[in-house]
Image (cartoon, rainbow, N blue to C red):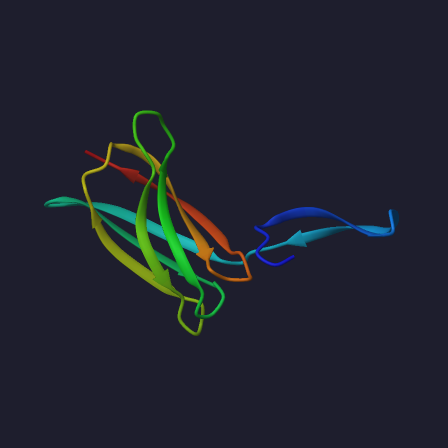
Length: 123
């Protein structure tokens, strides 16, 4: 299943209306993500790194608040190196204090990889 995100899928094989077989299909991503956020003079400095991604895959990074009153925002994009590692450092406008989940999504590829971690934005 190209570009299927991690999870378990039910697959059925059918021909001319008759089901010939069924199976469960498990998609696993070994990708991992670490992130930290620090106050910066003009906002918040996010440092995000990943490993065990597919080599040379393009990655979109976004932060999602785990509370009401704030909006999700894109941190940027990165490209994994030949060993599947990447790093992104970006200064964003000052965020609403609270806990966020940072997610990395592969983009523009036949393979889907997703990883996430959590950060705390402070005053």
